[in-house]
Image 1 (cartoon, one colour):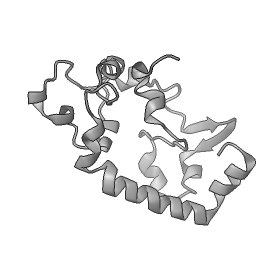
Image 2: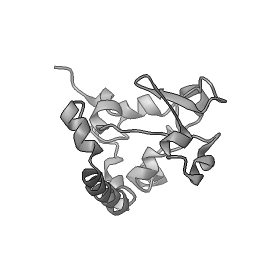
Image 3: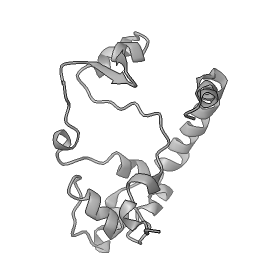
Image 4: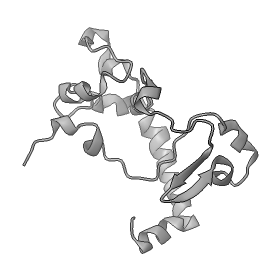
Length: 152
């Protein structure tokens, strides 16, 4: 993806339409469904393993004294429910450098909400709100379960 041909590939409208179909299906038919909560387990490779909890429980609204009787998967109903969990002190974790400046830079290029949404009416819905633009492959093994990995 981080090559000229990869960049060109993802700029192709037909590719993006097919990717949207795949990702919408993945979201609607799996990530929001009960079955997706199976990875929210306390086993060594689960997202709620002791090593992972050590990293995340100080920052999110999770009871560190949770027991199996409190509900499966720590009461998260799906992967999306876990992934969009509430943080205890978001301003501490992700401080906003300039809260009154709606411009942001990506690889040295300035952007605004209006530019990102091509000056659509809906852009005003996002002013003074929070948002995330992520165009990246996020591997669960690369960021949340680092404590469970074995050193070579």
